[in-house]
Image 1: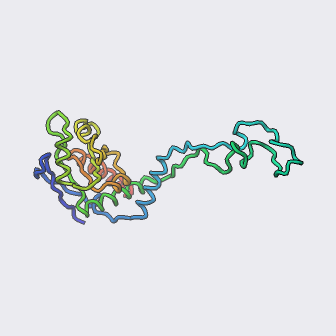
Image 2 (image 1 turned 180 degrees about the horizontal axis):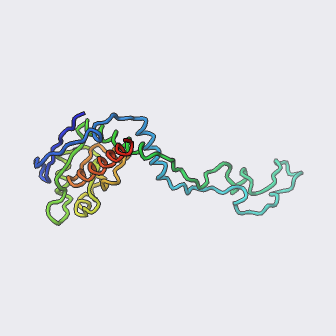
Length: 221
C-alpha cells in the first residue's frame, strides 16, 4: 500500500504544506468487532463502580420482631430489617466493584489504527500548521477555521502536550474535544466526526507509532 498525501493548511484555510499518511497507520483494514471490544473495555474502565446498597444486615433497626407471631391475622414477620419491610435491606443490589477489563496493548493500537483509517478514507482527517496565530489564544479564529474545513458537529483536536495556546483557543468550543497526541484513542476517534491534527502533533504521532512498529519488526526478526 502506498502512502497518501494530505494538505496542511494554515489558520486562514490556505494550503502551506503537505504530509504523507503512512499506510501502516492510516490505511489498514477497519475491524469493527475489535474496535467495539476495545471501546467497551475503555468505557467500562471509566466507571467508578462506587454504587452501593445496604443489605439486610447493614440497615439500621433492631433485630426484634415487628409484631407477635400469632393472633394478628397478618403474615408472620421476623425482622423490621427484612427486604419486604419499609426501610429494610435491598436484595441483590449493586455493590462496589471494579469494571475494568484487561485489553492487550496490541488490540488497543490496532483499534486506533482502524478507526483513524476509517476517518482518513472518508476524508475526515485534517492537518493544520498551527491553531493559534501569535501568542494570544483566539477562540473566534479557530471557530471560523473549523467551520470552513469541518462543518460537522463533533471535532477532535489533537495537539502537542505543551501547546497551551492551542488548548486555550479551543477549550471553550462546546463541539470540540482536545487531546494530546499520546492520549489519542479509538473511542474519541469514533465519537468524533472529524479529526484535526496540528502539524507538530501529527509528526510526533506518526514518529511514535512508526518507531513502535519498527521496534516490533526488529524484535520479531
